[in-house]
Length: 423
Image (cartoon, rainbow, N blue to C red; front, side):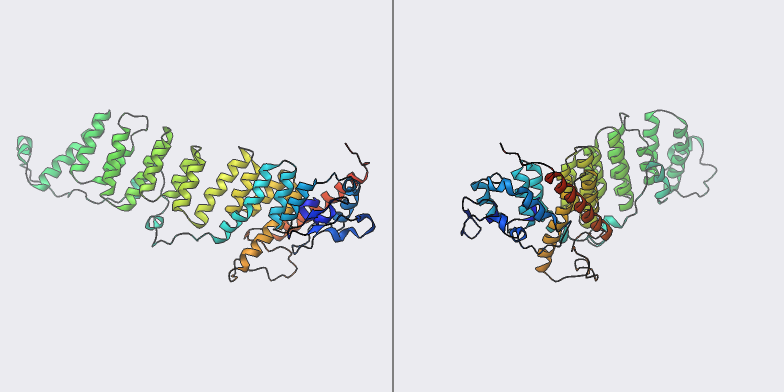
């Protein structure tokens, strides 16, 4: 905790010298006779937790400092080079000192994730992505209701002499269409794949491509004709309209998932610009990195963030890697979920340091560009933290500080009740 909050390098030893970040040799001094608060570095970060605790901890650690048991000379010198390089770097050093390499990597990656969050572009406009203007259409059962009845056959009365063998000599358009329309119901009464193929052929012949596509899409994924029928359905729908093509591809891709062919389905979805659905299918198949890569290529704004946040949920709850999940949450703009993960993991100290690092990084990034309504601080001057999380409620921030203060006081009492122990 002392390393995280930041203590001056001169505090570490009374019998050796320590090099600070400027190369100056700091002689050791006897801190027991001085106000120990002066050894804490002056930080511009908002106060968090109990302000009395750092000095109490320095007093508790005084016997260990006198014995040179806090940091050896090499690590103390290393600490002096990073102590003023920002809170995230200081937190990473503290984690690394205690062997928490995953946590150290998290702190080093956190500023980059925040920079990504604050600089991500908004969603594409409909002009840039015409596919996005189509509605979210349903499953195969809705296909017949979604498509229009376009090229249907004329229903004019036919000459009464055109019966029997004379029908074999039909050559006019209406006559040929009429004969085909009479054959189609007969195919409907027959069972088997061959009858379906004949029905599709007749429907295509009379120009009723919509019904032909509907029939082809009714083929079960486990059927032997599924892939050939799916190919024809996609090809025929493309000749009708863009919306029918998009719906057809979506249905075919969904059916491919049922046969563990989700990767093939995602390729079809990409062909019609359904990148969000493609990413969802990849994630359903466990291809989390592939989904994130596809999203990074084709999605922006909140669409991309949804992919990252679902990945973070998986990493947290399935892989149980809280540090990697936190980075993904931050990159997705889900600071609320990040704090909740830390709270559920019972890490009040890390939650408090997380707020400090986010505040500092956010403030530094914002200095380099004009503020807008999304990045400017609240009108409430009493708000201590300036955070990029648009959904982060102030009461959550206050709760983190209060919980951290309770944790600090409990830690101090625990340490003060123990006698110093040296190896």
